[in-house]
Amino acid sequence: MTAKDAEEPAALRSAGWKAMRDALPGVFPEGDIDLRDGRLGEELVDIGLTSVWGSLWAREGLAPRDRSLVTLGILIALGAESELRTHVRIGVTNGLTRDEIAEVIYHAAGYAGFPAATAARNAAREALPD
Image (cartoon, rainbow, N blue to C red):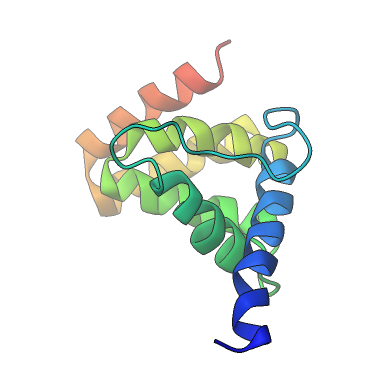
């Protein structure tokens, strides 16, 4: 293992923390905290921190607002309501309006199906109560 190989995971972790804290302000305390809980699959959150937040959300090329639009569409198509609730809030943090989130849901109805859009609407309502 080279010195660069050893630095890369640390850099991804650091970039991941920054991207995640920017998307979810006030949710995580400062510093490099341990996300493991001693339970089955405990490393999954850490994998997401480096591979999704550090490798993808921290990239240049798309603004966070645009990444939120893409992510919402993908999560609707996947029927991933739990993640969708979180990403609806992240979308608002990244500058999406409630009307724009509704438009993503309407648009997804034509491509992902009405049941997926209905589930997404319900998840968005939970994430953004009136």
